[in-house]
Image (tube, rainbow, N blue to C red):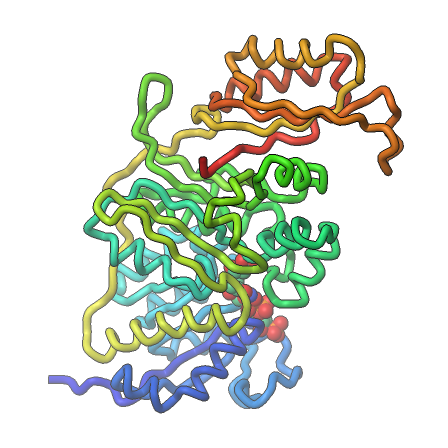
Length: 442
Ligand code: NDP
Ligand code: HSE
């Protein structure tokens, strides 16, 4: 019988915000980790782009390499923290084919091409773990993939992007403008190198695709997730939400749609800024914190809360996977495989029903409200509340004969709302449609 290994060779791809913290913890906790795993973890190479930069005591210069391809072929375990699609995908496929277990935090890659990685792991009988890819330090991948594997998940609803939560929270609490809040989020290491992925919702959509695939045992790609970011959320929207006792949050929602008279059955996966009641637990999730609600048949409602971004919190999730994969390496066996037996179809957003908040800038003249209300009524949309204020005297130089109208609706079909907006846009009394936000959590 072969002896379990006394040492496992670990290659780390990337030593940035997360990689540097992973290397620090690997060094500081070396003895404890060896006990927990039953083998020592020896970092044999750290792949980076810039070989000259000093990276502190836990990233020894002699381990740095610019030749990641060679490094991964001689590893027992590869930790990928470089991000992006290529060369990360090729390196991980190579690592898996050479028999290394892989731990990655790369949600963009998993959302873009997870199945190829799963298949390579399966074909080579090795592990692929990615707890850090969704909601940083919060254990959510393992609960959904393993702890709830015997239950039936109905819905996962959460705040899974720290940068956008930080920005919306700062805009709400301090009145900071979008650019100021984004700059601070970047300084704190929450935002990706290119914050477009955060503020346009792509990062949250990647996480939604991962969660939906796991929760519903179906393949849900990034292209299946309806995605709207926060760049269009204005101070006026934030103020309107506050007036109504609501808060704006960027939500990722993946749910099983059971189907009914006017709704097809399948999965809905969507990311958009939404108004939620101030009393909803997600409304008080501040700064870069994340929170995820899971609703399951037998378990009922579960809530997960914690730090969703940042070097050390994310490193915690990475290390959890490293220990799991390394233990399996020592004792034999592999973790869960991809499960897509259910093959549920994606239900497009326009087939769903929501409550809406609609912000309009209109000419302030007789009959305007009647025209707006009539258009909504023509599309079967029922108004719940309406608020109007004159645009006079605001900083944008609007004249006294224009006004802002904020309307909330009862539940209506998305398709009907989009058709109503087309009609409203064409009406001379409507100067602009400034906002269309959904209302959730009621
Ligand atoms: P960083 O940009 O801080 O670090 C990336 C690292 O990868 C750097 O060390 C960089 O080298 C190295 N790198 C990039 N491209 C290459 C390449 N082609 N060859 C070799 N090395 C390369 O990223 P983060 O640490 O923030 O993120 C890493 C991963 O973790 C990403 O997938 C991200 O989405 C994910 N993640 C990040 C979180 C966070 O809070 N930051 C939270 C959860 C997940 P160099 O230093 O020389 O530039
Ligand atoms: N940029 C991401 C965020 C990092 O802000 O949540 C965590 O995935």
